[in-house]
Image (cartoon, rainbow, N blue to C red; front, side, top):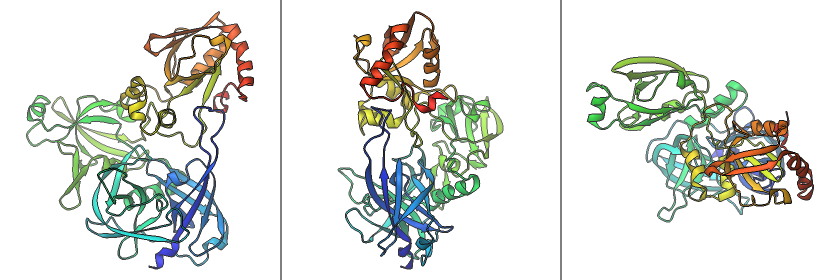
Length: 467
């Protein structure tokens, strides 16, 4: 296979944000994974291989030199990153990988990469065991994925999967570690890879995969369909609610029946036809579009068919799934550390199993709440740095702050601005679970500096909130 020479080993040094001490970063660590060369002097690998990178180096097969790489784009949702190398020496004598089409079931695939603990290339082969919409572990979006019956170990991730003609049909990205399953690996297929590359070429950066910002319900019950005024030949799904911050909010309403998307009819179980004799969830159609593109949506409202052209956008969550490489925002007054909640924050506080271990109120917001305005954040007291001023408040950990001096809090910046500008006698914070925190304004602000000095904290407010 001539294309194996295009597979490179990726060395990355990461410094992750530190959510328990947001004014600094965690200790750096290094990792190695695989990547491969594509046309236009570019290299593809997994997004998680270069997440929070401080330095990325690449090594070609059979070479002894590591070349410094520049990260062009990181697509967290689809778990793909694009790199390039300035040094001309790196590009000599390599021919880029060519992409093939989506493989059929039972097609042979070969995953090539550099597994952990070795500098030589390794080849694992398997067959495509299914093709479906997957929830990507490192992302937050549901995209098309291939399942193969070959285990992918963590060093292999980012390496290409080839078909029997030597064309690349995907990128290896995760394996299933479960008691009952052995030898299952997942591959990011070419439609997702091409979307990522074209998105970058169109806009010079990664803009993401759009979604139809609705929650929907299946319409498989005949009585439900009758009550909704659907004729016997009409099929579709019922909208439960629409994201208030999304462009769809102007057009679609709760209890509308979505009949078709871009001219493709949606079945009562939310699937659409996909290749000969298979069906797939209709979110597949949405994820093939680009951010800002228009989609033609047909709905049934009060027994009338309405048609809309809706501009699609990416998902704006109340609790974001990623903080795009930026350090976390924080604000400190009188030892109270205020932060905005994100999924990485929950993961850092409660571990991998955060969906079981985090407080129920935060989980409820994470799974069900929708942002009411584009800049809304969920603000919590992350911890209380103990000092004389905050006696009795030490137990407050990860409890949401709802209002300050009677005004509802929109986001962290809003809270910081209000507290800084406060000239009333007391600072009153209304917390979740009906708790109340009261501090005397003058003494609280005076105590802040001493607390910062004690804990070696450079500033009471993170850089991004200062502007």
